[in-house]
Length: 77
Length: 77
DNA sequence: GTGTATTTGTTCGTATGTATC
DNA sequence: CGATACATACGAACAAATACA
Image (cartoon, rainbow over all chains, first blue to last red; front, side):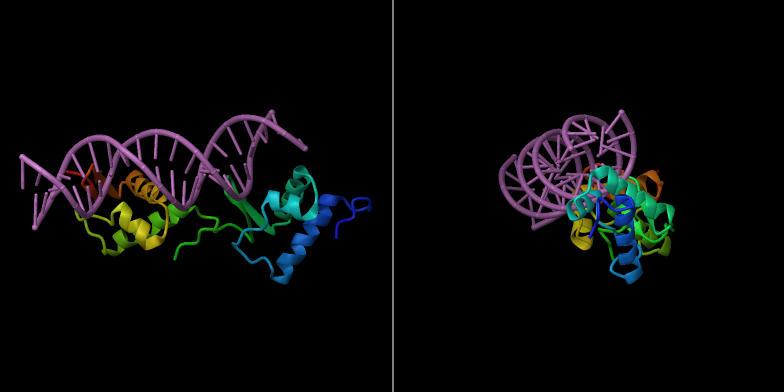
C-alpha cells in the first residue's frame, strides 16, 4: 500500500490514503481519524511520518486537531 | 446525547447540557442540580467527569456548591 | 442515640491522545 | 527512535458531613 522507495514522500502517500477515506466517506466529519499510534501501526511508518501526514491533511483543510484530544474530519466550529 | 469520541471534551458536553437546562428554566435558582451520582447515571460518564462538568458550571458562575449538601442553581447568598 | 443512605471531597491507578524534546 | 509532559476519561476506594428513619 505504501511504497517507501517511490518518488512520492511516504508521509504524502499516507496522507493521500487517509484523504481517500475521507472522500469515500469511510471517515466522516467530526469523527476522529486514526490516532498517530494507529497510523504507525497500520502503515508501518515512524511516528514523525504519521504526524507529518496528519499535518498535511490539516494544511489541506481536511481535518482539524484539538490539542490533547485528537484529530477530526472536517473543520472546527 | 453525549459523544465520547467527539472533539468536545465529555465534561464540557455534560456541562453544556446542564447549562441549557438552567437557561431553559428546567433547573431553577436555589434548587439542586442533579447529584454527581445522578449525572453519572444519566450521562453514562465517570464520576471524575461529572465533577469536572459541575466545576465548569461553578467557574461560569451558574451554580454554587455546598459541601456535603449538593450543588444549586444560581449564586450563594 | 444508632444505623443507613446520600452527597461532596480526595486520592490513586490505568488508559489513550497529542505535544515536545 | 525513544522519553517525557499534559489533558482527558474511566474506575475504584475511602473520608467527612448531612439527613432521616
